[in-house]
Image (cartoon, rainbow, N blue to C red; front, side, top):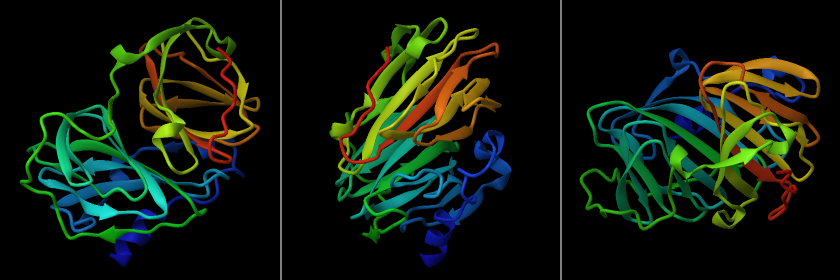
Length: 287
């Protein structure tokens, strides 16, 4: 287990001191590491750490990206100092929170609140694209308590009785001139601060159509990580510009002025992870 934890908390050096293009981390399946029986789970998980606790100055802990192999998953376990959120981008997976299990179709996300037992299992015969996000109560600290339960073959509720969301574009609403940007984007706040017990502030979903953009904004109370779910475009931060594409993770620090432009031919879809300076702090919406 120590080897697993060392791998989970090992990634790139401090990003804040590098040029923008080097702060953007690209998902590369060739770099995925196979790990068996994570938290006493079944089968294999293939993953890479995209960002770690050095990526932001807040208590953001990590962003991991990978694949749940067929008949593979993460066993049931607790965290007492961190919160996580499991995301699947395709297929389906069995999510467990506090002993209750339901199957969700991707793309979907399930927060794992601090102190709640949780697990995930891919019961299908196809790989499932997966991501895990964590925020800690102590900067850089990770903990876990495993229950030695792989959650294979357990009874399932037809509908989840725990907090979850489908990352369905039908749930988005149109916003004209998002933060003063060009055109009409599609947006929603999937999870507000009340969902979390740590400094985790929100999960947002944003779709920028071709030829549109988000306006320039600067955060004082919340840092963010943008994960490109689909499409391509460019990001501008403090007068630096860099290309972005599907699978990229972009950290945004306090005081960084940012904007996104879709100069591609397909929708640019972003998942936004916000982490507050202190619990409950938010920046005012500019749209």
